Image 1 (cartoon, rainbow, N blue to C red):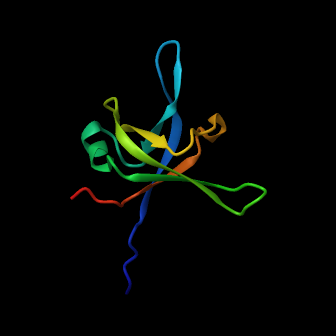
Image 2: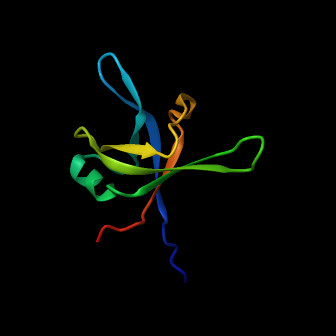
Image 3: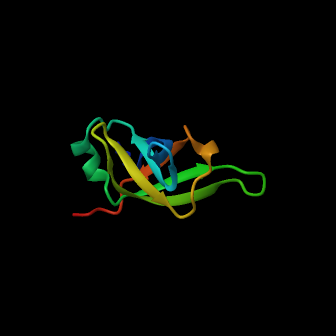
Length: 103
């Protein structure tokens, strides 16, 4: 019996980092499935993130990013992508890759 190995953990793009009056479009907030506190989120620092979406020209397009740090105490993380994400991606699923390892 073959054991299936997971390559990614699902997550959700929940919005942009913001202050009271301004929104910072260059930093996105991600909610990773199964992460409920800051200590659990720290193991995902430095991991690659992918948003896979479909458009009319190509079958699938991937936007890559990287998790930079935690955000608050509830397990939300900050990520920076190669291109700033469009606001229509809010609520879309993301894939948090389990590589590269920092060990």
